[in-house]
Length: 112
Image (cartoon, rainbow, N blue to C red; front, side, top):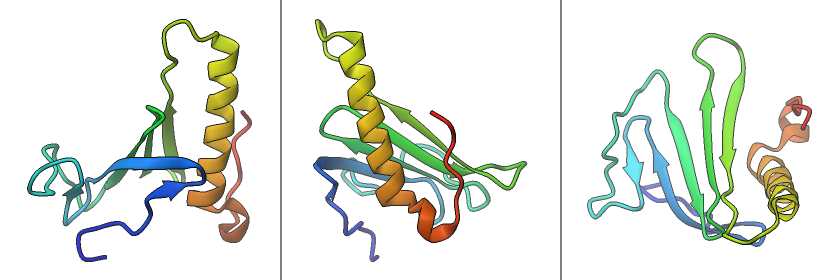
């Protein structure tokens, strides 16, 4: 979309940065909007950072007919682990539903 991404939120979660490591590359967090990490036409990856401290990475598998994702959500000091896990589960379900749209594309959800 002309070097930018139209989405500013996923549900209630604000997107603070997006990096695309395909060709052409894009990184909203750098001055020139170019990624500092290597780019690849054959194995592009998208990384999305959120205001809640969460990081989501999406990529196609290089060896299997699978789409892989990695989600991280760091808890704040003093916050109970159970609350962080609950928040992460809520956040991850929303991300997968809104970004990957499994029902629309016939994707199978992993067991969580």
